[in-house]
Image (cartoon, rainbow, N blue to C red; front, side, top):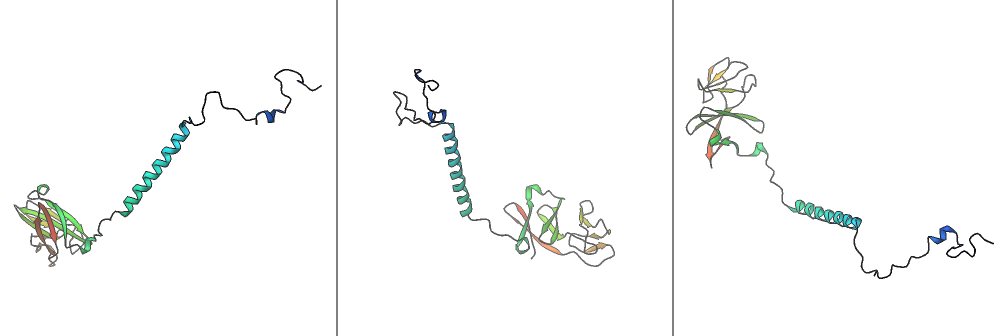
Length: 174
């Protein structure tokens, strides 16, 4: 006689086959009452986030970019706001390969000169006490018009035009 034969509630089928038997739904439960679990919400959220990011990337791609502005080709360069540029102050700005020293010498008077010494290439400084432009490397001294006042050179500094527009100070080559 086989083991468990005739014992009520005992099945003689091998154990692997018992687990493959279909499980009937519990009484009173309808299969159409499906409820999402955490995994379904997580998957839906990831799909939604991917869709939103793809739409944002497409919008960013289709927006026009900024115009290419090459400093060497611009007609002028903005130095500073008038309010941020007090009388007696100076600013050194780069404009492509050029270095320009801009000086606010008096009320509504500006001067723009070559910012490097033609003798040694040193960046020039503004001395507000003597109202002169000084080269700290070779002790050259220039006036506000770019003319040599003292030093071992006769090469004047290049001058640039300065204009005001909407409260800002600009330098132009002409």
